[in-house]
Length: 95
Image (cartoon, rainbow, N blue to C red):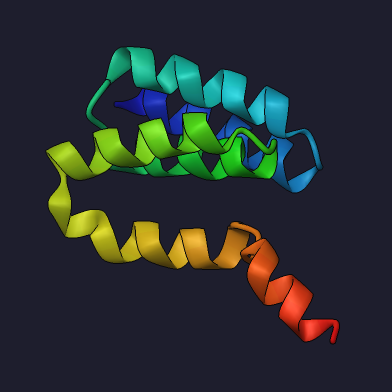
């Protein structure tokens, strides 16, 4: 558990410093230790969104929700904050 916390801390440092790929590396190391850790799955989804890898992010979110459905609110909030608006909404705004 301590090793996971260390990886999560390093991931936070890299994420806050603008290095999401390095953050992802450490989160993936944490995931290898505990494949069902909800915080790791959520953060991996967030990093993938940040990197523009929406399909990969969805995979992590689906995995998280299949094991921990109580995290649905957190996932939806994160998606609203990070996912781009629909193109239809953007085009209607510019008129």
